[in-house]
Image (cartoon, rainbow over all chains, first blue to last red; front, side, top):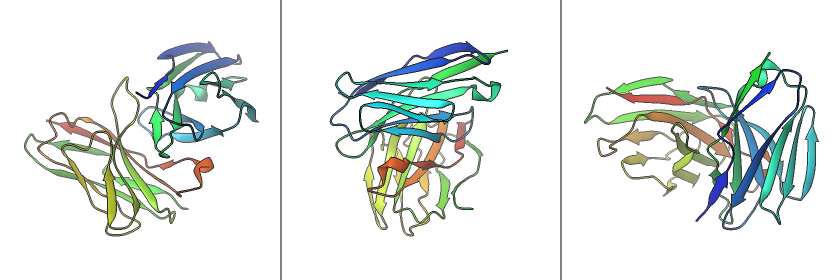
Length: 109
Length: 114
């Protein structure tokens, strides 16, 4: 079966750095997405990785290793507004998104 | 501004009733999707549509129905056959083939059975 694993919850301090990991096993691979979702709101697109390596976009970076079935989202200079759930999703061979359960990130002052 | 509009934001349903959730987009996207989100679980696909007048079942289609009569609209009906409908429902759209942009989501409808 298809499976995406990410930690349920993480806590970090304002101004610090946090890494959210995602491992996956899917039928085929057409890219990995990270989304941010504030409570009760729509998920918003953060990043897309299809090749191995690190993609940097401001305070957020995303890394992919296809051979290991592994990705991480790195958030730097954490701000209180970064408190949200972070969803990892993989596009399979049928171009359907398979979603992880999300990681709830709590930022403390 | 382009986007996806879901309505209503909150919906209460009595047991045995059918209810319809609205999803409208003005992004000119061909593909539209309905997801269900429950606490502690990933988004689960209910139905999707790649073109007008055509749609396919997702992983949890039982107890739901959809229509795609217009490109802009993809309403979801939660029927009385859906035994546990209380959830957060998300509509999304995308441009098939342009996967690097991901999906655009509506703001969701929270359905509660009373």
